Image: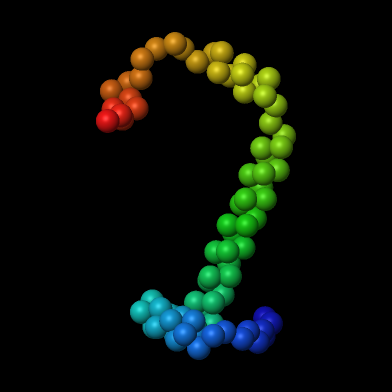
Length: 82
């Protein structure tokens, strides 16, 4: 495990302490969890961009051509515009 010194504005530190206490965890656990959540979000975005770059428009259009031309099922309609 590594130690890391982070400088935070007093107001942010106070809010983190309050939220950690509300969640009944330590400030260290709160910050580690927040960092892990941010990392997961960024890595997910990287993954989705990589996968999207592999996509081919021809394949997408081919799949669309296979979809039946039918009205939507009940509950799947677009909301009525007003």
